[in-house]
Image (cartoon, rainbow, N blue to C red; front, side, top):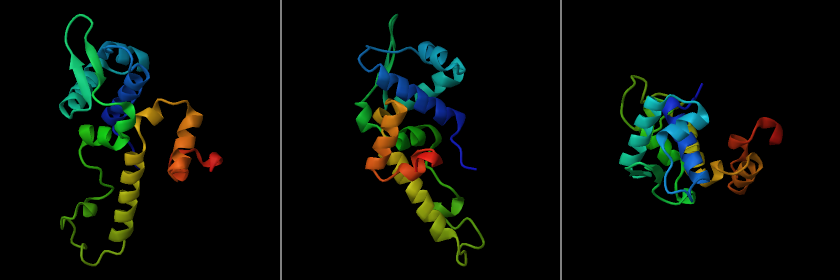
Length: 157
């Protein structure tokens, strides 16, 4: 089963909260940790990775914390996940390297590559600003991008 890592999940959660509070000067790692009940040490490492990747700005001082480095509509879920976990691949054969003895005769390599591309496209089209909207708005955003089958619960499609 495909899953986000805890770190990627925490990163998306933090980005969502920062988008919701984008008019505040900064939000501390502790505030984010308390809001979502996630381990502060792990969250701090995730926030540092997002800062190094240029998605967050870090503010030092008594009222320091983090803020989005760009408007939330300019940051994709794909960028956040890639900043934390690196490139997204469903299988090793989609990386273009010959990492499998069956590489030349494999019959599922192309369909898996298309699936990988679809996931990348969905995550690229999903903006942090979309995550910060109420659930109904997220479904509407997905419908506008023809992504509703991948984003909405099955009973809505």
